[in-house]
Image (cartoon, rainbow, N blue to C red; front, side, top):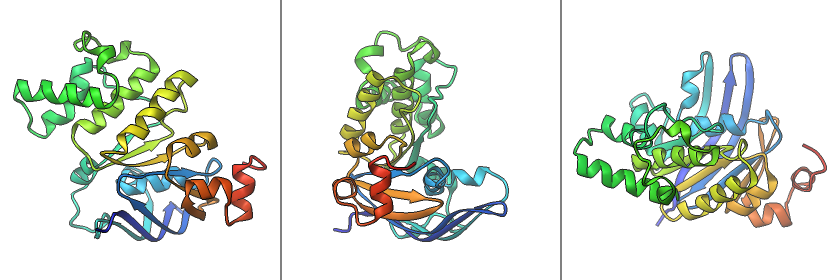
Length: 252
């Protein structure tokens, strides 16, 4: 059985006149965590946002090449972008809970999908919070404002909100960059756990984090994919000198 989820071929991307990605070829596999690493401004977040077309929201962007999701080009004119973003959920760098109750944060996407039965909503809210390892901390506070949660809890709430609508892929853009080490460790543990059910692509500037949570790693530099391989190989025996210099901290 082919376990390819995304197949990127000769992907080029521009913001206005400036090119951000050059001829990127990457395969993202089912139920694997893929980390995108590289110095700031190397194109890793741009690539992540191409996967669910979040870059469409930015004016004067242009894409060339193909991104196939199970054999269908996500940039084909007939693709329903809302449906695509349901299948390919996203968790941002800064946790962004809605100024609503904890329960309403999770129910929001479900209601848009037409889930209105009270019993089903509460079951799915609980299931999502359990998957995000947050249920035990908030089960008695579901009607309280999500804004009262700590930073780490807010980020796990955003993960719960993303998985409530049952996506297949989760994109995470530096999900721990604003968190302390304890909250970061919880999110990392969660990322490892979620792999059983989801395919995860994570952008991180933290080498140790990439080594801990991912199965595959793609190293980018100046918009080009320098090397893509199993994480253990990238960190212990990279094929490229530039990769080795980056992961050992010699530059970046």
